[in-house]
Amino acid sequence: MRETRPLLRPMEPSDLASAIEVDTLCLPRPWSETVWREELESPFGHYLVLEEGGGISAQVGVRYLADELHVTTLAVRPERRRRGYASALLEAALGAFPEARRVHLEVRPTNAPAIALYERLGFVVTGRRRRYYGDEDALLMTLDLEARR
Image 1 (cartoon, rainbow, N blue to C red):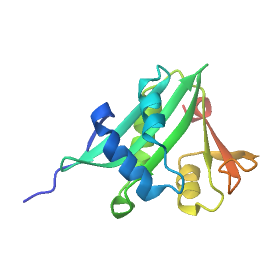
Image 2 (cartoon, rainbow, N blue to C red):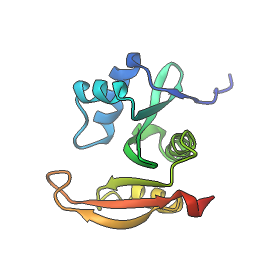
Image 3 (cartoon, rainbow, N blue to C red):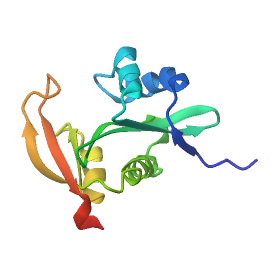
């Protein structure tokens, strides 16, 4: 039997339990259900998932405001990593806003795999947010979409 390709689609409220599970597996400080609900209801948010075999393997979220995007979350189940899912999700989320000029995100300085991914996509470190995660600073990374076009 052939493995089917993952389905990239908008996140729905019925995906919340899976989104929380993926967050819990991937992030030291996962979002609560309340935060997830608020994000999905926001007119500024855009959330996508990769679905495989009826389950969620990965997710991404961005917020769009004043011609800029902010990546709010990106997570891939540990056993599904190194398949290009994070890149595909991020590119799809950015592609949904062709008018955007820049993209910002925060990342833990200790998360070398994520930093390498963002650098491959053209992000550069543009700042540091002290104690952003409470227990750790965050690197602010920015992608100039106009230069990329």
